[in-house]
Image 1: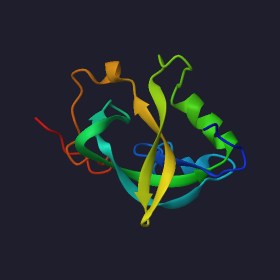
Image 2: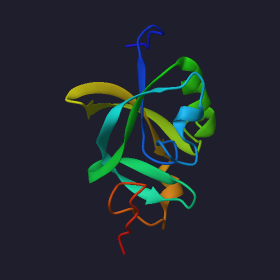
Image 3: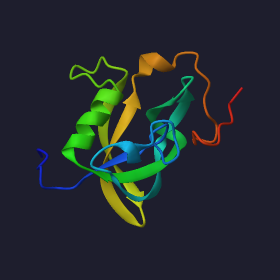
Length: 134
């Protein structure tokens, strides 16, 4: 089903875009509205100055959900280096995330799987509470 511009869009952020992070999403304009916190199935990797999540599996990745405008979505696509053919640093996905007992369709920026080879896994699944698997 094609996206309709009038429908609210939501994004799940799990790294530097979180509140207090080095790329805090609140700095974008118009300011996104925080909806709540959530977690998704995935594995979180440390890529140095920022993390990358690979979706699926038994692990959990913790983050925040925001309501965003098309302008903010376009800015996020640029920041995450999304390329239409899927060859960019991140791939834009959509999945259902439970927040405040409500299921919301959210954009999630998944790191390209080629970028996580030999990178440490963040065991907590939380960029702000980095503990690594050995």
